[in-house]
Length: 361
Image (cartoon, rainbow, N blue to C red; front, side, top):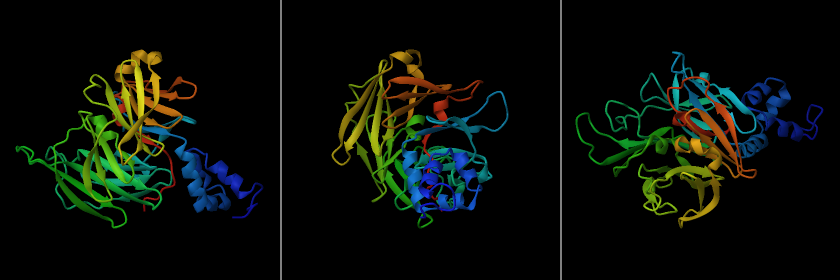
């Protein structure tokens, strides 16, 4: 890498600036000149961009207008740059975002059942996943949507897995207790099938909030009594205990998030938000890292849901608002509010997101 490159500023300075651009601006910057195009493809820049993005959490929300028959739109709520529209039109399909991990999105086609994409909105790259020959993984035939959809992206090795899981049952018959799981491997470009015997239940938020850490996907069950874990290194399902007794936590709401590469549990009561982090993953050692008073937003507490967090921010969604809490200043700020009638609460289709240069090909 040249010290002065082909321009006025050294390459390092240009890279530091480009690494902090919004998604749209970064994409457009590639066409400014040959130097900028070359720098954005450099491995050093890709790592720099990914490192910077880790400190800048965002929320991706699908907004639908009940008064209009137009297509739903995606917005990105950024703690530093505000709110901007988010487009997946390069997929040339109407899709629903099902999972988000390390800058990649897993989307299911709305008109074509069983069609899935993995894409990176920053690079506008996408991969159409091959259809599995297995019957649909679902509780309710003939609806082909899986009960659980997970996306696991290993940025170190530039590979990913997509997981579709659920209890299949034929129409008119009771479930037989088999929990069927299909795992797509991006390196082999094929699916593998796992079968276990369990009957788990999940709320919508439990299904949405899937966390990928330590090469495993984690979901919180509807009872909030434990975490269901799929270890992708050995294709084994297991259960993980929570940092408190579920009976003692009756009346509280529990959510599963990621915090700086660790598994985190957020418990919300009428007056407090307690944040736990799994410091020792293999010995199930949890510790409290923050306890936040909810007195300032007391009227919103019954309908508030944590979506994303870092050591500095916690993103929360209500029926029509997106809030951000700054941990150092203890200040709440409204980042976005729906100005019209929305068919679903914002948290219903909200996903944690951060922009990266992760390749999905």
